[in-house]
Image (cartoon, rainbow, N blue to C red; front, side):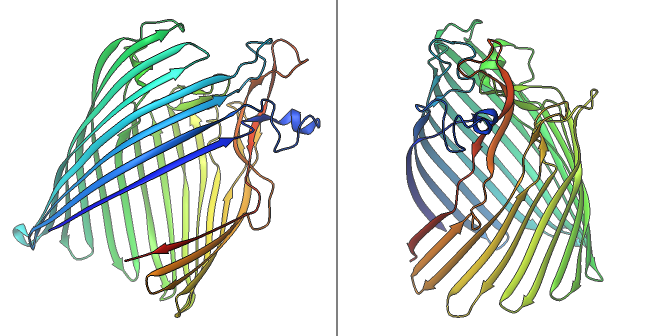
Length: 439
């Protein structure tokens, strides 16, 4: 039996450039770290408290409970379109979010061998409540939301024979949205209560290892939740649009030091959420289909030196019916890591992270630039004390973090604005360090 309690608090304040238009940098109006509206920025804080309970009922039975509570606040000032909607005063909006959230995850695990088959049964229940108080000052919108979810689940893991592993599970998700408007000049009635539910299933199959090779296949359904306010405004809107994914692949140990893997995957979303840059929000945009390959390798170069790498190649990311591109869907992502672990408590790693170019619009006419970054990290541990230092963006690469294609207007431009790529500049070379005491 074990009981643990831990908490944390985080606070940050910043002034940022926001999403700046590419044409402003290209024309010399500002540099890549400049800003069109210097008042953009915000502050946030988050306080967390977690309580975990673990009880070994018997050798084959385990009961665990995880509970948590969080208070979160955010004040944010954004100006996405500058002078497009309000040429005299500008389009800056003020967003405030204050919320308390809490939840619990209780589960019971039981291991048995009916008819000689090893079976692990897990059943449980999850609950979460969110109470956001959202204020959008520019649009004079103030709403209070209470969102609750209830999720019972059951899963089985079986090993019928050597070389065959099966897993299956099901869960139900019930969401209740209760929305009360305090102020609303945006139109529509934002008072209401809606309850929606969604069943989900999953299954996986693993064959092997035979001759140092494993074959596997996975299938599952899921969902993403829509904005509670949108569901109240439009009761016909699907509150929990479904997602369906599957994959199959192989893992091979070529030598005791070399492992390779390859996976084909696909994902179907009944309702894709895309960014509306003009409004700074997301909106549903129809069903989509994604598919691609994922490759991985792990090579033990020496007893103390390991090279690992992963790459995902997306061969399709398009809307059903129209076959137009899903904006900003990655086409290539990769990660490589060279790690050295020395016996006297010192370790170091060199990491490469890559995101390839991707389409920024549905018509594939605009490109969001990719990047390749290198990070170097070293750690040293002596008894209870651990020190670390990290050099991020080792080569001081100029890159773009968030990128979106939408219409904005700078002073002196046409009233209808100019469509353009807008981006947030990536962090230049930086050094981080810290100490940790472990006991």
